[in-house]
Every structure is written in C-alpha cells, then in structure tokens.
Image 1 (cartoon, rainbow, N blue to C red):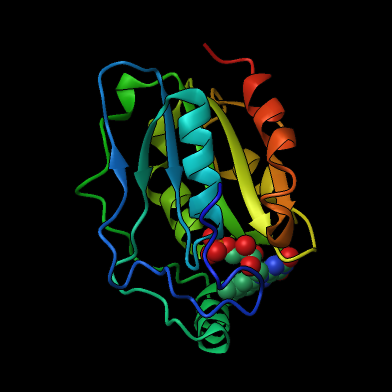
Image 2: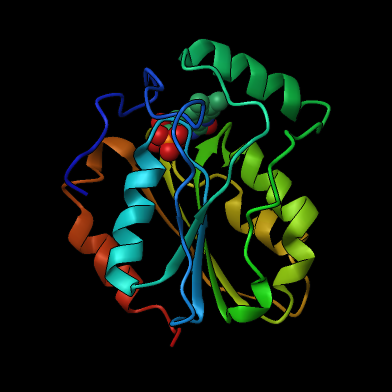
Length: 192
Ligand SMILES: Cc1cc2nc3c(=O)[nH]c(=O)nc-3n(C[C@H](O)[C@H](O)[C@H](O)COP(=O)(O)O)c2cc1C
C-alpha cells in the first residue's frame, strides 16, 4: 500500500477513476479466494491490491459502463441521483470470472452515503445470487464515518446460504498507517 494516489480522502481529485485505466484483473487457477472491488479514486484499489498480495488471491475490478466524474462534487451528485430512486449504475459483467471456481469472496468498496458504493450495490443486486453457499466478507474505505449499513445490505442481498463474516473498514487517510491491522484481519479470516 505504498503508492497511494494523491487524491486520498473525501475531496479526492478522482485521478484514479476507471475512466482511463485498464481494469485490474488477476485470474489464476491456483486459489479458491476471489477479491471483487470497485474504487473511484484509488483508495479501495490500494486496499484491494494489498489484500491480493497478502492472500495471493484472484482479483477483479468492477467497472461501471459510464465512469464517475473525476470531480468529487459531481460524483456525489450523480451517486445521489442514482441512490434515491435506486437506479444503480450498469456494470460491465463480461469480464467477471466464473464464481463457481471460488469458495471465498472478498468485496472491496468505498462507503457512499453511509452504505456500500452504488456499483457494488449493483453487483450484489445482479450477480449476488451467484455467491450462494460461499463465505463472503467486505472491506471498505471511508472518509471517517465508518461502515454504515454495509453488513445489513450484505445480509439482505446475498442468498441465505452465503456465510457472511464481519467486515473491515478504514478511514482513507489511515490506509497506510494501519496496514498491519488490515493484514491481521485478512490473515485471521476463516478461509482456506
Ligand atoms: C459519492 C460519495 C459519497 C461518499 N459518502 C461517504 C460517506 O457517507 N461516509 C464516509 O465516511 N465517506 C464517504 N465518502 C468518501 C469515500 O468513502 C472515501 O473517500 C473512500 O476512500 C473513497 O474510496 P475510493 O478512492 O476507492 O473511491 C464518499 C465519497 C463519494 C465519492
């Protein structure tokens, strides 16, 4: 987690949006653990990358069909306009892996309006049923207000047969200084 983007924090400049970057994808046949993450301004991407290295997991980045603006306020406006009518943003699903290859799924996402960021919400709404029977947990970054209703949303949207573990969240400005804590959480997850 060394090369954190300059735009860390709630007033991120969004320099690391998916607008231009190629989506991250590390898919092998060597692990039963998959990380699926969305990151607008790079904080959760740094967190996900660290998790991938720590667990030697597979990893795929969620990409929205229409990327969020780099401008923070414009992104908040768009996110609100999506959230209030629950018109979640379309995500590109063609590059998602075959979930049957995995037993454990870690979902990485920012906290938006005290809940799971809209693209991850859309993932849960549209692909969540493919996580039946799996062990699922979430890690997130926030700007100081915690995890919101993340656990409740996971409980509500994932199939009953999914085993949902307590999640992890961190204030984005503390990503680097708390990486040992995150590493401990990752290594203590009851997953093989
Ligand atoms: C649309 C939007 C809404 C946000 N809402 C919250 C919030 O309710 N609580 C909070 O602590 N941080 C909030 N944030 C800040 C982000 O959670 C935080 O900066 C996070 O690290 C961004 O992750 P990313 O760089 O992976 O996109 C919000 C950011 C955006 C863009």
